[in-house]
Length: 243
Image (cartoon, rainbow, N blue to C red; front, side, top):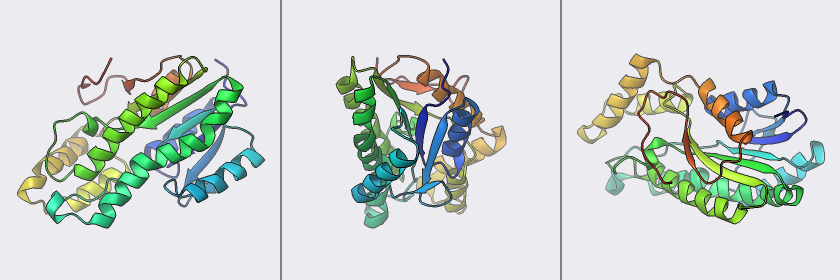
């Protein structure tokens, strides 16, 4: 599929997997509107409706209507038991990781539907499929919500030419991984799982982030809709999600 000239909007594009996905799209001739709180072509807080409305006006005025949307902005949130967690940071995680994709998608999906073609990819996590455990309530809850939002979105988009899917981009040594490593450096007993995960990613080198870029391209070139998808040959054994 020739993607030359398509316009893509990628949130969380100033670092990590979001940046790699943006680069993969650019390599295929896509015009990419990179979005982040700082360090990208466009700055925006994805959890702020007014800010996203401003972003929509700017992007469409500069580049035209995006036909590809990658919601990659995210934070990990507090690593703490619920009873000890910071409510402000807990809610911020839900707002950025779950509500943000809703706000951005709502702003841009209408143009895709009108055009009869579009691709929406939301970055989820295997954490949304793992059994619940201590210290990860904010991030995992946000990603579970993102999964279900994407399923509802995909159902609404059926037969429009627009698709919506979620992916686990792999266990990648990103800035977020480094933040988790630093926060669990002196781990309490309930944080052992995160210390073990950090060590495992360090020892294995993690999944190459380029695999996430390839997966996104594969999704764009297909008609798959409403699925939870994994990179090729991930370090972590894929976990069943839904049909």
